[in-house]
Image (cartoon, rainbow, N blue to C red):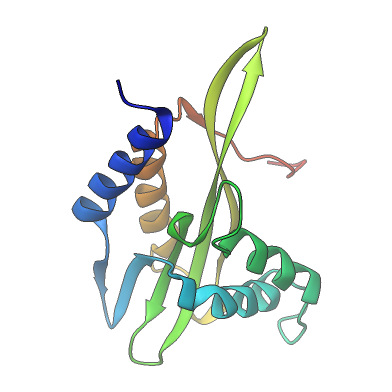
Length: 157
């Protein structure tokens, strides 16, 4: 009998083998992060989500991204962070993460995938990068056995 962890590892390997990395054209590649990407993911998110003005950087947002992209994170980690890299400029231009959680309804636990930290560099918007990442996120979430994905914390969404 497989444990839940064994099932998730097998799903992870099957997902990665079949879906990513993916060439999006124009030097853009969709892939999952690696431990070597942690600081670049943190810097990208601190810049993109950090402030209302594009020239601001928020170290708290960077710290949050550094945490969820870390191999020490209890549920997320680098393999649950999707990013689009401009291989010509050698930089992250879009990213999001999938945070696996267990929720309950009427005392019944069920698996949920939470997309978080969705953002794209303004110079790369309107190219379908978030859509491509969400396709990968939905596939991985399903492979992990999540019954739903839910975006929380955005009052107007």
